[in-house]
Length: 412
Image 1 (cartoon, one colour):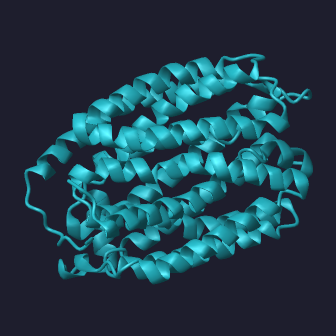
Image 2: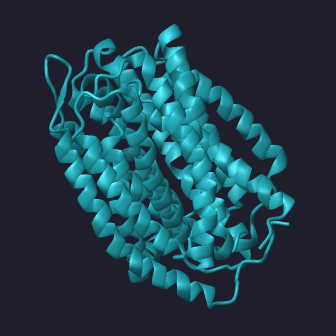
């Protein structure tokens, strides 16, 4: 199934959108080695700084779910994206730990919903047979943030201060917002699939439906892995693996380039050979590499890069295929609500995982992180258990393929 010109534009727009949101969240991880001494905070406080974004995003997702299917998705997207940019500007002018903490809460309230709106847009405009390719490109936003965003953010932080990366993100986000205003068509076909439920009834129906609950359970375990290892990734690389701060951008750059290449290929592969087999492959590979990574000692730069590249191959395979499968779970009239609740569940689980990571990991007086291997075991166990949960999601996706398309084809 060939993509139309407008579909390609929508995919690119969703990718750039995700780039800014993901970069805003991820930028705290590489800045951890700078923020810990700069703000005079402990690892538990830094873990809260990371997780509070997720908790506020989780609350926002639930509050939005009941209304998510009652508005044109373009208007809803612009509203939350504007709030996200304003929150990021506040992060860029924060002068203390508590100011930054409050700014992260505001950013999370708006930014946490953007991903769910993007998923609903993708499900509205693309049939399931194409969503592997869609998710493959959109997921490259994660890699692009490593290749372009994180190195530039670290450079700006080293040259000026830690505020500069947030202001950079806000500037990029404003440009993306202009493109959305003038380039994206209204997305309101779902409004024709009306129901007479109130916002609360719509939310209650979404969170209580057994088929949907299986998707939420899978999302919880999917979020556990990334959110547990991410907050202290840079500190572990610097203090435990012996890599200097100057070499961190090199690691992110090489790993990101490889992920940008692999993402679309894995997306096409999931559409051709099957999304669940690709997910299983990524989960098994990711499990092995997480255990190896979390047990590394002093390691040369080339070794750290190699481990990261293979690890992110597994992560990319999991996320691309899982996103495509999960997008098939909700009925067309419930997509907005389901994606909002799913995002809320993901952010809450991620926030809990980040907070737990801050309690498990202890930084010694020398800067070395202890008990990082424990995180590796927890993440590996979550990856393996998720294989079983995603099998039931695959069965739902197969049943969707046998059903007629309900949402009109508007992406032309």
